[in-house]
Image 1 (spheres, rainbow, N blue to C red):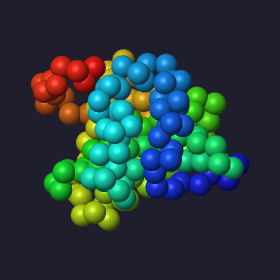
Image 2: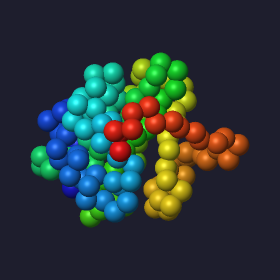
Image 3: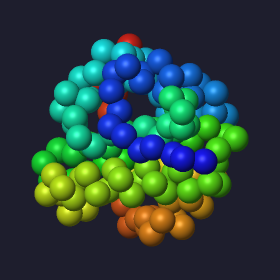
Length: 147
């Protein structure tokens, strides 16, 4: 298995959406505006060097969206096709995204993982990501159409 990790482009969008929609429980984290083609295109314009896909022979196996606000980095929507999980692809994607954030001068990154996502939480913990029980995450919907 020869996996290639490369920058995500909008040509990958449809394949990545199919991957997201094919994973159990992943849809609960998707938003109609933010994760639309226009929303992801906007995100990529702001973060052109920090989002990646994994592929083999032209087949998309996984992807990770990462970005930053100039101060902190953030990981969004990391996913690997179910049949390719456990083969180190997620680690390669996460490592490459973190490296790209470091190259952008970012020194700390965060992410949100649903508490019910046991597999995802176990993966991120195995990669050295720590929980912050001293924080309370809050958000506010600014556009009620962003379901």
